[in-house]
Each structure stands twice: as structure tokens, then as C-alpha cells.
Image (cartoon, rainbow, N blue to C red; front, side, top):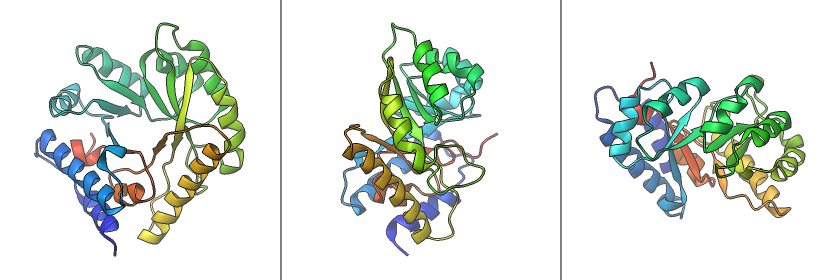
Length: 244
């Protein structure tokens, strides 16, 4: 069993209860550095996105005090409410959950990033509703790499057409891909899915899309994801503990 998979297993089993958020963050950052060095990469090449869904604003404040800036929210209204409560802090908010048509305006007006874009209709609404005074919305396309029946995401077959269409929209900047693969039983299976995502990412760059973000890897599989080229890992449980 490789170092990266052992690291992933440790984080998959780690559910901090009373440990301060600052200590958990330090532990996660050390894990990212270890995984990056093991893969011949530098830790700075991997961004940490703290997944704060269902967590109180105070937990986000504690993470910010420990140096964390970027936070991911799955539930749009909850995220917007949290932003209002934390408006005094210079935070970077990422939408990482599914987006319905009736929520696009909230996302366009409040979030800096979207990781979960998988339909052109939603992309067009986000583009049209992004306020002109804000920077372009930074977006990743969610791709259903392993074909999980219950997963959102564009199919690999339809990915190129969607990417090319999204890249042309105003007030929007296509940055890369996001994946949420089904849990795998062993390192080889986990690595294979992440490797396929990296190949899709590289194929889009090969046709001139100039992507720089591969949002891949969570608490349980961040080591293997980093080894396969992830540039952004989304970690919640290992930072904030079990979700409410």
C-alpha cells in the first residue's frame, strides 16, 4: 500500500471532535505537503478549499484566523446567509453543490467560484446574471468520470462541446474541471478514476482551452488525487469535524 493511499485512509477515518479548527487545518496542510512531495510536486501547487457546508459561521471565523481564505458551500442559500454574517472578512466563496435554475442569480451575485457547472443552460444564466461590477465568475465543469448513476456532471463524451461553449460566455472564466467519483475499494481503482480525470483535463488544454484548475480529491482520497495531478482539494470533515 502506497504512502498516498495510507494518507488518504488516515484522513478518511479522521473525524475530529473537540480538536480546534486551527490544529485540524495545520494537520491537513501538512498532509497536502506530504502528498505533494511524495508525488514530486510542490505543496503550493495544491489549493486547499475548506468545505464549510452545515458548519456555523464561527467555525469559518476560526479557520480564517488560522489563515484559511477559500471556503466551499454546497447549499446555496445557506452559503449566502453565511456570507452576510461574515461580510467583515475577505473570504473567497466557492459554490460546489448542484445549481438549479431558480438559484443562478444568488450564485452569480455572491460567489467567486463555481465548481459544479454541468449544463449550458445554467452557464448561460450565470453569465447573464453576473453583475458587471464584479470580476468574471470563475468556473469548473463537473464531469462524471466514472459514470455513477447518482452523480451530477457532464459525461466525458459531451465535455468538450460544453467546455468550448462555456469558454465563449461573457462575465465567466472557464478554469478547469471538478470531479466527485464514487468511493473505490482500493488504491488502484481510486487512482484510475483520478487519472482519467487528469487525462480529460489535459485533452481540453491540448485543444487550446488553457485550463489551470483540477478540483479533485476530498478528505478520504486527497493523497491519491494529488498524486494524479489535483490542483485543488476540497476538505471538510478533517477540518471541521462531522457535519451537523
